[in-house]
Length: 442
Image (tube, rainbow, N blue to C red; front, side, top):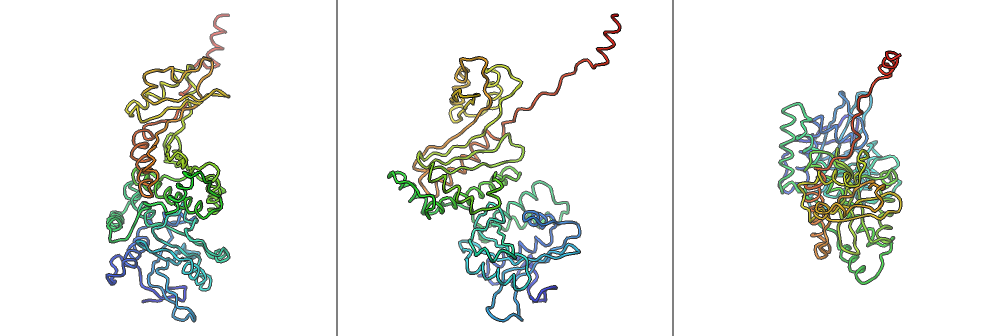
């Protein structure tokens, strides 16, 4: 134990190779993550940037574990870790509370550490667990809001940290070979079952209850606990799905959230619970860098169907219905024609036309309008899963969703589609050329 400068706390330096009891899996995992965070600037910068804190060349991160406050009276609280970030002119600090495996974050403990942070001048509390949050500011545990007026409450899932490490490694964002070695070794450790990391793989029991109620013709109240729990599980799965896409593509996939929902996660849950109640649907949009369009996901609980779609603007330089359709079909020449749906969207009140990709290939008139002056304004490309039994299962729903989005839709459709871009402007005679021509004829 050593004194931690600038605080009344004592703690152990976070170690890459912690000497701990076999039973202390949580402490071992956290120590290795914090030690790497403090020693690999790119890793530290990624974490700080994710929570809106600047990281410059003068920034240093000190990491400690087994933090105690010997002079403090009252309840003996012992945060798992403490980060002290110095930028030269200022310091910022955060307690760290970690859980692995199925160990839950508890409201009482989180609130106790928030009160301790305020009392001791620590700026934030960061929790790390297998719970998923859409953003670090969207904490999975609901606490008394008064406790977060002066202390930030932030959360990282273990798989979000693993994804950050993976992207730094594969995208060659780390220049120092020793630092890269540390990241890859930490990644290797975190992937081992002994580290205690778990993905989101099961909807809660409320999933089955809600589906049963809908099958019986009973509506779901927007403020019911069942609706909130289903939506919370949906949000967790969406975050895990984004992380999976990030690791699969090597690019940072993110949910598209409105400013209102980014700033207020409770409002997001309420709005999605309202849509679940009124339309029996769960929806989301995922953005992947450089993809042709966001990936739209819809889980329809009434029909027990999952639909995954991308909507592309039709090429404006094509003056015929057939040429606009062929622009899309050429991009999908390798796709399975029976599994992909094509929907053409027309201007005004003209009805949408739809067909399988195979049908569109065989008969271009599937997407034709009797008024030849009308041209499709956009195309939607969709794949769907309509297996009601798999949709109903708490685990098989997650498996089917991830299979459909990542291995089916993204692999076969999303990664091959390109958005329309206006062609480069053609050369024409310059104004002075035209002037010279006119004078030469006079």
